[in-house]
Image (cartoon, rainbow, N blue to C red; front, side, top):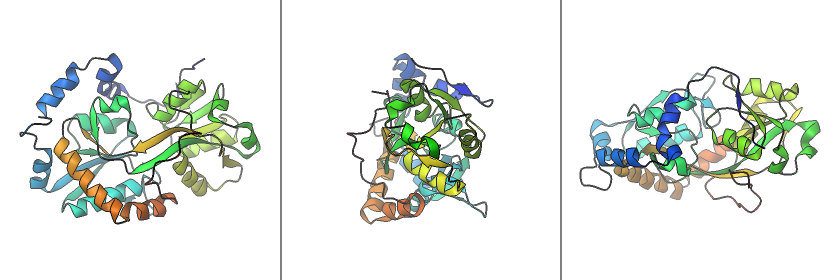
Length: 295
């Protein structure tokens, strides 16, 4: 039985829900109009030419999702995807300007034309493909959970999360969707990961759902041996990529070409080892991974 997600803060999601409207309602009319307006697959499509002429690539991210995007001890924005974007910008001779915002505002900002690219470990999903185009994937991973050390043997698979009190970082993330689909009692937090981990330690939550590699970094940063990763919990194999507005095919293709160069020369692998402690450039084995829909 699915449980509705609770929410521990005031968060406006109307913009994101609007952005997902065509996919949720099964109505492609607005998407078709957006494609026509942006000239997808036509000679008039100038998204890359416009950016190349201006010399600036505007990128949306949060700066609050280590090790993907975060501010270091010198208050400088960095992280795996941030540095990857900078490498792409350097190869394309572009100045990269980052706009930091709440996670739930990134895709709406992309749709509204406030940014050129969304860079925040976005998984490619059918719903998002209705509204956005994606650069080729640069990170392959899956979801897992942080639990109390004493409960490590309690979870033999992702199915054991059914009926369990779990925390997620955002109401609109795929981890929140999975929690609902698997029948967990999900609570979304907007106060940062430390509040989540404290609630797991104190018994207010039994697990924290997120990307496996992100969870590894989270545990290392938090440094409390009362917590561990339930290694047998594996769900939602992901292909993460940067997003552009639907129809901006020339920009998407130029970014993909440059990304492939960085894949080929080992730059992406080096960045992933630096920030994630693993090479994330190869697809994961999906045979033991529960799908996003909980099946």
